[in-house]
Image (cartoon, rainbow, N blue to C red; front, side):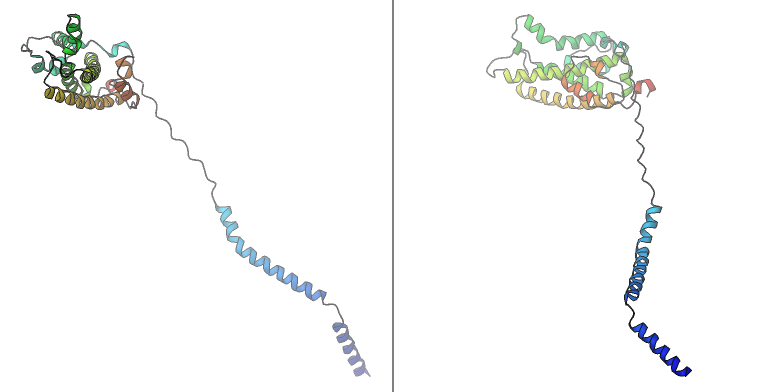
Length: 261
């Protein structure tokens, strides 16, 4: 009897299990799949999350401190008197002006000779001589030699106020005389006699040489301007455009005259 009752209970339990809904099994499978997916996702994302936590926050670079501008003395004491410049005895081309008494000459005498040479065309005009009869190329050649000598000297000579004044006048006069000579060359009539004119070949050479010297002078001028030995104020407001442009494009790095070197 007990054996029969046990078999009946087993049969009922099997039938109950067979007739039950599959929903619990499906839910169990879904839950198991979700847990596995979360586990895989966590494994994949864990390094990136860890990396994100360990990344440093970028810091904006600090701006470099701007160097202080160099202050240059712009007082009237910067330029002295060109006629007393020590460089006159060194840089006046005596062979070109046919001056034989070098030892006895004072700087003022040499300066007046240069002034007379550069102003000869004005004197000739006042005397009734035709303007184109006087060849400006000769005077451009003289001042080219003067300027070339001055701007090839050691930089410290520009710290002398009188030498600085002479350097200013030499550069300005060279550029102006050269420009005047070039214009006269275009406007002159080759058939017209010019009693004070140079030979055509000599004139062409003199102008080429003076133009090359002008380039060297402007290059040296930039160096002096960068070291504070020459400034735009030294040349005044009526300086040739080549000079003002050269100085304007040059950055002043130091005041060499103030530092004594």
